Image (cartoon, rainbow, N blue to C red; front, side, top):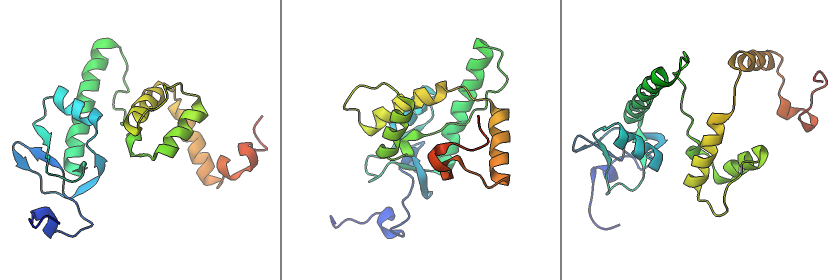
Length: 170
């Protein structure tokens, strides 16, 4: 390496520490699998959270503590917007981070749903585009949960059946 030793180097090599600077101090918590993507950076800036990326970090993974702070800031904003814009009651929608998926998986999603995109998108751009599509899909929660429970109880899975078609569907 470069001959310099840091606190991160002295830890277990499989454990990376959070890449964020919180109120001027580098976080010392173990990083999880959540990444500090451009979309997350935008949220942090918009909500004026006192967080920043440590440029000396060799990764962009954040700890679960900061992940929860950022998610709660996002949820608060969504509640405020929904009260102003509509009379929806279900505003505590969990955020799905498609950036964690592999590029091949994102491409399969794009192909399956026939999502139009311009050619030559990188992973982050593709994930952002697909995220907009994902949020636009209407979901009947009661039906989905009921079907999920039925599938689990009957040990059935559409993917296990030939051509994804069951004998009991019409």
